[in-house]
Length: 281
Image (cartoon, rainbow, N blue to C red; front, top):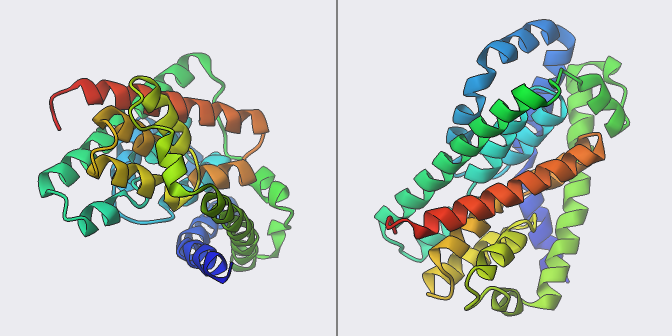
């Protein structure tokens, strides 16, 4: 139990700088540059998924959480957030490096995840622009959902937002760590061993777990020869760290969160399975 608490605390503390910077920017946008920012987003939105996928591919923790907050505030598009989620690597890179995986394999995985994010994000934004309702800046609603009064200044509101979400992530991370420790990583990995076709679907479900254990299990299984390329890619594409967790905490309406969850899962599984058929690994 003490180890689980420490692990949850350490995992959550890594997110603090990203959360604080994200909320500081959100508060500044509301107080100083709301209309100008919306105009800038309107002009550059088509490039959002490309930039989001490239930034999401950078090895770091917390970027997906920051982008989830930006989406909740109406600052970025649906396609941009999906691009970030698909390209985010979570614990994939540290595991590959620690296991002395070939550099070529690492570069291929990072590039495939980034390209998959760009492709899916651009298509989603194109569909949204044709059939969806345009999202506008809704930072006031974001503040209301967090239960704070944003009239008390940029810094104070940013700190309050950060603390609230940090506590939420800490509690959920502890519960997930507790669940994984009781179920066992070997039992989780057994769900997707030697299961053609269904392996990608099951790997995608494990990838949805907003915890570093999911990306660790998937990466190690592939390196150990216990998972196909398609299954590994499906699980790692779907895995977005705690980004989805933050989205469900901050974004409204809730049906939009379930829509994003479904889009992420379908895109990750389909693109993972298709990439697994290509002779690139």
